[in-house]
Image (spheres, one colour):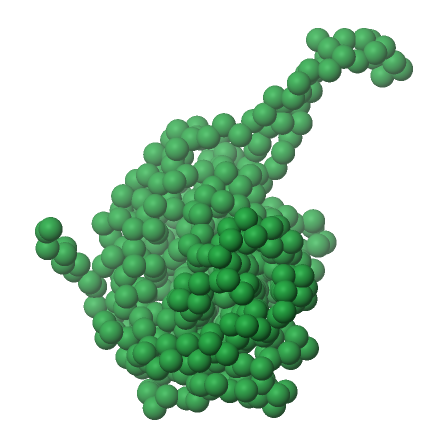
Length: 495
């Protein structure tokens, strides 16, 4: 085995000047806002405060670039995506210090998930041209007032949606952008990226890579801001043809309302309250490993996390005690130390929200098995928390904490478990742990959830991804991602 390659990580310069990328030019703003390290609460940078005028300039640039990019061959578009992937494979690992500092990820999560090989892979995946056009079987047409008899043929042709506003979440800023930008560009759309206000600096680094890769000016634009005016201008503009948004259901609803006047297309990946159903023959060890990922993987700041455990009553006590023991093994601490498993939440506001969430659960009658307190650390930490003896009506069971909080309910059979799992406004990602895979599959088919994993938390990277109910609209990843960023045009003829 060879030595682990040394990464020349770039130090974080809190005084670095950052600019917006609009129409291929780096544009200065008159104001900036602070980016705070959630791990230390220190300022690590000053992001450009984009305005409505900046948003309008980005829309103009993207609209102007659309005809040329749309008419660029899929092969040429793919070559640029491959070039961008190569640059990211080489360059992105050096950004780990920056991305770790602005997101608060543990250094292990930052290196493997934020800027790891998966980031570059998302672009190379869409570099291979795909023909999504589909021919319909010809049908005979009798003579009518519309025309003569004949054989009618048709093709369902996919063409780009147009100018796409990509509004992304704070938990995995670069990877979330990649999931939108790669398929959108491959389909021939032009894009305006609006990263979350908490951690936009890594996305501005991505803009540098886009320019270096040789994408035409205006094809990719990056707009940052701490307020709502600039992104609202993107959503409400009649020149923005589609909004792709990842974030809370509440914000998703506002985006739909603001874009309704111009019938703006939307792709929404919204909140989740992942249900993990355990039957009486489930492997407790495997289930505990999955549940513990809520605490140890980015402090529960992931919408697919199995935060709502629905356990068969015969396993309930053993599960709760095992989870309580596991919590004690998870180091909560400095995010840059290699053995830290639980880092901070992204902001002081989010920490306060999670603490309030836990208090509400206890006040409603849940048993605080462990956690709920604030560790004696300088950042925005919440200790891994387990709430037992929960009931379906509790706010802690019905709403998303987006933090290291797990709630546990009991059930007495598959039908009750399915009813409890489906008793939610959300339906993004669910899990079934059972000894019998056929039984697990039957349960999965009954769940109102866009995604269900059986005895695992590992998703298929090319399977359609999205949610039922208030967890979203549409699907991305794989071929579904290309389809999501396109419009279908039916072309027919009479032979």
